Image (cartoon, rainbow, N blue to C red; front, side, top):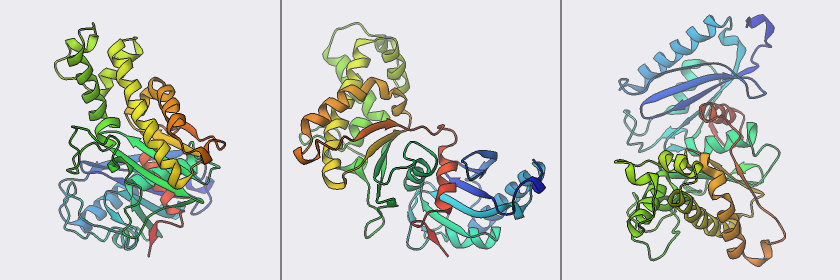
Length: 329
């Protein structure tokens, strides 16, 4: 694509910084990633040196595609532990730079573009709102069911940050009061211990221990949530019951969440959400059973993400660039 075919400043640079790799993409207003690239996050222990290396990768990719820096209008970046008030990364244990890291300020100075920064979970929610299943909605919960359970709350079309910017940590609300499941946060019975990939494996393992029923999962030496999903696809009874139990826990939790933020929809993303069809029914039934009566007439939609998993982080970062919520300098 030649730069002469694109209006100057038409595209957005979306950057997703992870503990191992950093991915970037050039995104059109319609949500098409017209080119992408990546570089290792680790190995760059000076943040300015990292920003310079990233700038070179982006510039080289632009030139290879027949584009130039003038085709970019803004930059959005998602990263762990971003303080939305300052645009700094604060206390991210998986990143190699001293805290606080002046993320937005350095990116803006290095790329010469207006820069906005946001926590990665919030960026994912903005991606859903701008390009995905939440498009056209104003009040949404986005829950990521992955290694942990991440979430973000959108109210009246804006991200809810809270006083310290930590609003929306729904994975660390207590799902089961008398639970024996220890969460990484140090508490017992958090939603994350049931609805994350590790939670699904724990549920399936518990069911295997309590039952002599035949299951393909018994032949595995190290079970993953993906294994449970594949077994459920093949009709494995233990796997199907494990997802039904996951759905029940999620349904009860979502009934509580609806009581305080009244969403139009709850959107599920992440590896566990690939098995959405296996837990949706149990989740809906448990949700309706536990829902506060004043919300019964306002049906909340439960939806899987419509963003391609490989593209979601980049699209979320690009959405940050145009969000009124992300920090800019």
